[in-house]
Length: 468
Image (cartoon, rainbow, N blue to C red):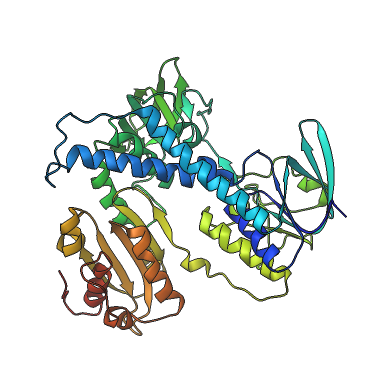
């Protein structure tokens, strides 16, 4: 009975540990299998959490360098960055989160098994760890093995000079220069980290906008903000190759006019997306179907074609977001329990942790135009916000897209201070289908960043802004 479970979760990232905890709360005997010796997956160890720790540290440094004098704060002995302590703090944040996960596993009586999981059949999983093998049996399995960084033709990641965000989080010394291939979420966040501490950063992006999956007005505004940090963004440019030349890298590309160009930097960071990671699971042997891109095929209950095996998070279709995986982890545990949960995939917010932050939910303006859907737009700048002025954080705006017929909120797009937190209010409103009028008639504390939402809704309704 020791190796028999009701549910085994493979992978301990946000989707995996959330699924395991919810399943345990529902009364199941749960085991979680993790390939590495630490819980939390990519997000906790080499992704979301350490990246945000460095983003916060560098934002403090940048403000000390550029804004403290304005606030009357004088640094008489100058300003220096202790790069070793900079990384040490990040490691401490990760360690604290991992410890918290270990505590949650014990609290919820979840067995943690370390090793590479490989299916023998639909009810048995072999765990290999340092030459030892253990076979576990379970009624249900939840695949939550996440994703790995991907690359493009001509660019081979060597983890030395041609690196991913994983290596960028633990460099041996502060780099003097860096080329980042890809201007998506990871690319612009990593660009922010290093540019703030004085690294010369160039982003090469294939499309004609940064963060191309988000509303294009956000990308244009972010381009200007990053330019203030000294980041050079080369849009509409196609990378041909990246070469490790010893102490530096050379990246060759075609610019937006099709002209051959090259650039040299100490590091080349590849941030062109991620791929589903199912290596070693032996899915073919048990007949679990996958898509051409390697993602696991699931139905609307997140069940694979093998009845007792489910999959969640980055290994299935949809945005590769930690909070999406968490929602799916809870969803699957409750489906197995016979409940009827739901996830509204159209209302999963996207966030970029630059400063100012970028956050959005619902349809972009480009999507509405492409579908021929009528909308009213309300846009309010943070330069007119009293709270933003008080904080000297006046870059950015709030944009709301509203149906002219019923006042339905179709999309909310924010670039500004604390956008990642402010967006939550709009997610609630859209989930429960409140109207734009409802959104501007509720009371907003003054002065707050969220007041910009109220004014944007007022403008979308044909009225003028009333706050400052």
